[in-house]
Length: 535
Image (cartoon, rainbow, N blue to C red):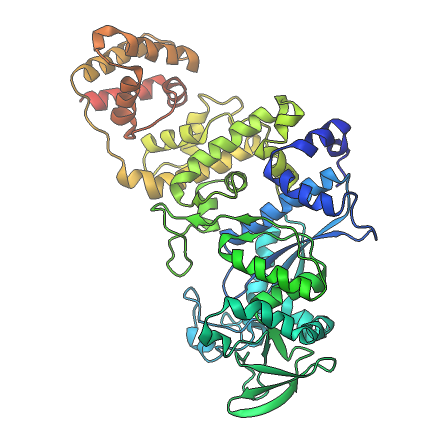
């Protein structure tokens, strides 16, 4: 990294003991390479991607989290060189036709074929894998990630994996001894570390294989009823998943790779295979998986997750990074309801950052996010209006509210209320309009006030009528407090008064500081809301 501020003695001392998970992960690598690799080559971080489908939020989180560890290691090591490889397993055979594409019949005719040897159903690229790889690169470039793209097919077809494949053949029995005990009896009968490509059908075959000549890469197998001998080098075979992962670690020299909890067994067995091949498994973290709003595991086939496009429709890129940063080893709910809080919490942490001592900064998610790719700041470290308050404003304006209308109200509250002067806030205005349109407006119900609530609202209206339009949010908040505390209105607690305000004026069980809302919405408009509630 070129930022000298990241290499100060004070920061380095704090980083060495920081409990922030990127530093904890980076310290695993630091034990391996305290000052970088002895030969001066970059420490290699890897993320894997299966191009049988389009990139998704899981792809983003893995590249982001790996980047955070990469940056933490650079800090701890004093700027040792690093690389991040985004590896596409595009030599894999197509197992099933994805649900979310057109022209499914075209793909159905190529089941079992390597993904880079299947026509692109979208008609844009050389193959289906080339299409999805292009989408992956576009996706990662959108967020400014610093990475190198590597294709499995390119490595297999060019012969760059040939030496590693010979290593698999040389260590055949050791690999079988690792894998066979992990398989069911039926699977043991057909298992092979190598998946040859059929010379007849060009499919990736799941058949038993016998090594004939390891150095020449010759194996024997049943190709649709005929025993054949074939060379597996130069793209004529790929490896089974766990063997392939281990081979890749050894061939590329991968030093760090994280993965989801569902690959726990794969990490263990691939690590053993890597050692059998004479290599060393990378360091890594096993993270928890995402859950939907019902606590069920997210499945692409079920479609019960949240796409990255959906998040960016209703929230900011920074808020997504913030949400993914926290507690990676705990299961996370992933649904639209979590977005508003994530947006506001991101800005709360960002506002704290400049005033925190260095040891607290290193525990602040925003410190890490601002040093990852794609997060280079915006219009300052404080958002003049919270996203929650924006949603309340848009909620009372209705489903047909416009950006211009929202900004006209922001003029009551925000200094220099010009979208050009507040680009981050302007993006959130667009997000809030979409969130309100799709999730708030269809369900918005304002209840009628009851008994003492109506009296308190009438008193609030009377106080507002006598209040200057220039009153500050704090002054308005104190006015609201005074009514809620007045024993004449018989509220057991202030929260009951605020619950009344939220449900009768905003149509929501929760809401903002009412002083801030009144200042934003305007005294006259708030009085109209009260009149509607009392009417």
